[in-house]
Amino acid sequence: MIVGLSNPKKKYHKTRHNVGSWYIYSLAKNYLSILKEEKKFFGFTGCLNIKSNFIRLLIPDIFMNINGFSVHRMASFYNISLNQILIVHDDLDLAPGIIKYKYSYGHSGHNGLRHIIKEFNTKVNFYRLRIGIGRPKNKNEISSFVLSIPDFKEMKLIKKSISYAIKENFTLLNLIQ
Image (cartoon, rainbow, N blue to C red; front, side, top):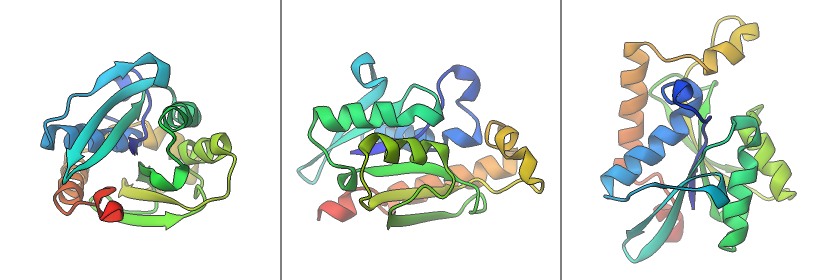
């Protein structure tokens, strides 16, 4: 299962905090998968069949700080454990255009990850694809920064990193093989 963390509502779609959903939309488009709203999972879902591997996709359509409800609901329904999920999310500690793949426990201050860990109620390592969005100079501006739209240059770098991640298969495919 691959999850792209996001905030709901049209006004947030282009914000830095929603880069996880940008990844899922791009991945689905690349593999000709259709995402559809599934209210029972509080989000948009799809699936991929790549090299005989069936992979579920999820973009939660609830606020970031409660994305765990959506992730846990879908994972429980399909009997998927947290360590079988790739969580794709924005990362303040990486510059725009930088991506890093990580397998560990912890949220690094990210509220979406924090809530997922709380919902699964376990201290198991899990897979993350961190997409760099940069960091504001003033740490008091973090909330407004993640909820703002990247400038043209940053947007181009972020989209390029997402394309690279998909091209290089920074997905569950690497874990399944």
